[in-house]
Amino acid sequence: GDSVTQMEGPVTLSEEAFLTINCTYTATGYPSLFWYVQYPGEGLQLLLKATKADDKGSNKGFEATYRKETTSFHLEKGSVQVSDSAVYFCALSGTGNQFYFGTGTSLTVIP
Amino acid sequence: DAGVIQSPRHEVTEMGQEVTLRCKPISGHDYLFWYRQTMMRGLELLIYFNNNVPIDDSGMPEDRFSAKMPNASFSTLKIQPSEPRDSAVYFCASREQGANYGYTFGSGTRLTVV
Image 1 (cartoon, rainbow over the protein chains, first blue to last red):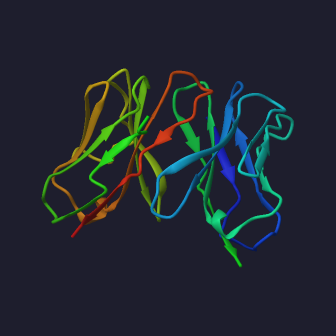
Image 2 (image 1 turned 90 degrees about the vertical axis):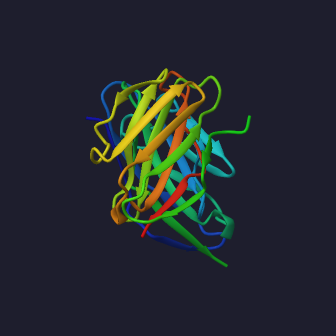
């Protein structure tokens, strides 16, 4: 069945460091891929998405490229800020009607 | 659009009491999902509806849990009787038809059963 695997956390970075959170997927067909962010005490918010191979989603300085050949959708940001501290979830939407979420990766950015 | 609206934001109740969580999805969204989030289990899908009809309730943990969607603008998740292990954050989410559309989540209801 469809599934998403993302890197274990927690991740702690200094401000202005480069961020990568790995995400790989297993799916039949051609899924759409998403990254969600959850700030403390809040619900999940859509951060970015890509709906077909080689698409790049981007938002708020974050980017992820849909790589069909490696079945990956890694999240990157060139220079993180303290305000980026949150939990990040990779997700896919496949042939069914529900999403498959990863387990989440907690990011803490220290000044 | 006000987004997905959940109420209450926080609920503290005693074991054995009935708890009702409420959700108003975004107008025009065909799907509604109820999730539970805990530190131990992460995000768990409990049930989802399509056009007000329950499609998959295999994630509902036991008969104490029930969910309804009487119309396109309202859904409830009920726990009766509640137990301490039900303590969690419960999220409602909605989306449009089509795999390209993401979910929009509500802010959640933090339930504490004492």
